[in-house]
Length: 127
Image (cartoon, rainbow, N blue to C red):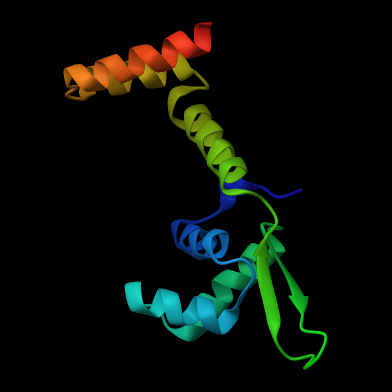
């Protein structure tokens, strides 16, 4: 089973591209990420391979040319965000969601709109 909490920040960039471009080739990923990072092609390909080993990214080989690999996410973006959030809360706040929320509320400047939005979220959760 995939351990999403072990995905590095760089690997997240690969996944963001993959979630928005299903399926995609390594060349497409390299072209896209080369425009927004200073990573070399080999670095990007290494990150792709790490995600495959972590069972977060899958691939299939083109049946016609037998050379082109098409990559696709094995987990949804929401699944990965939830797993990463859970890992963060456990690591930083000893598993206390209330502690995390209290910390962010105490440390952040909130507008009246922000407070109203948070109230609406809590009301929906409650009812």
